[in-house]
Length: 503
Image (tube, rainbow, N blue to C red; front, top):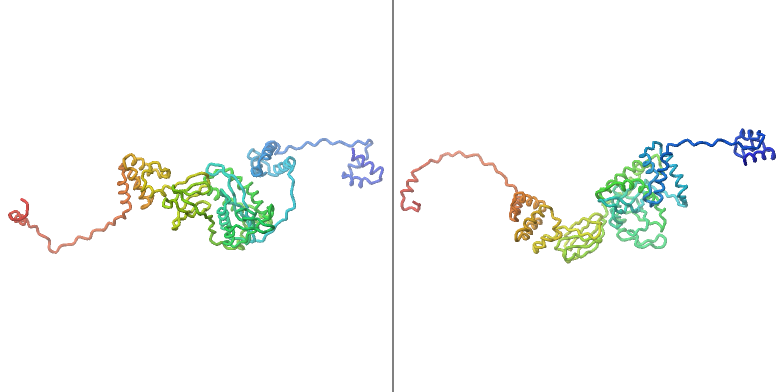
């Protein structure tokens, strides 16, 4: 009614033409003329428009349930619109993604009322100028358990080529290993690296840009010849390229990682590496949409500094060997050779192993464990001690991890008096001839049914002997004067009574 009354006042009171009035009111001129021609001032009514049923209608209720469920989850666990689109397609939806994306966006805008923040300065980088680094916390099923993983994100600021590497901790050795892997994949090193104020790089944050850089971290930057630059406090947008990479990869690559089961961390990292390289081929570059990330990376690679040998990124500390030949590191205990008991050794921690170096330069490599309160034995470290204390074989904890042939030999030898000493002799042969040779000798002795230390050592000595060379016999020589048989010599011996022969 309001529009019709305004129209009548404009035309019949104010003297405006129908064209001018209809233009100001935003209605068609023909409609305005028809309304003015009516005798009574009754605004026409139009039939209610019946919306056409959308192909998405049967699935909207399910989408709303998923969106409501995601609204109660943590930010990292929420599904993306792409994931919801794939899920609704699995239910039978045959339409395009447009209606699904529009419906999800409309629902989120209405229900969640997310404020949009502004005020960030866009950044631009030259090819080969800089890379950005950041950590993120993710979860995945590794070795049968859902584990918290620290994922390193390294991204070239210009080409947007990136790499992700998962670790159990954010310690120095992991940081150095992530850089070595990334520079190897990128094919070179940019001139600058941009970081936040992480503890593995910055010991103390000063005023402005003043930083007390960690000595070990500075050694790495000096080795690779790039300059480290640190963001201001609470200014993550200064490395926004890698910050966005964390969000995008969490919704893409890491979503698939979290749905799989991984035998170990190495298997997971191999798959993630291939997924990153595949993404380079598929992703369009934000500044040059006609090119992929891989295309721009090829141009950037020639502008990178060459890679030197990887930085030897270990963390070293002295440790004391206990009377039980164990060292302690990060709430775990590891065995070392018993000759080092009560001495101080140097422990060098790498991402996957520990290198223990004695005072005389002898070293052993131990597989690193990231569990807690574990004792990891290597029974070969206690062989020389068993020579002096063979009775400890019966209940010695390290020897429970021996190979099954040695355990079976031990069970049979300990049934007899002095069997522990015999077993100690067999184990001592491991240091002389190697574990594989001893295992073969033990298996052969068990198969023969003659279980004794002497038999095992006899087989081992025969296995260690070099194979005798078979020489061909020379050709028979023809005699010029063949020998003649003379039986009369025996008669002379028989008749000789004074001889020393026996009657």
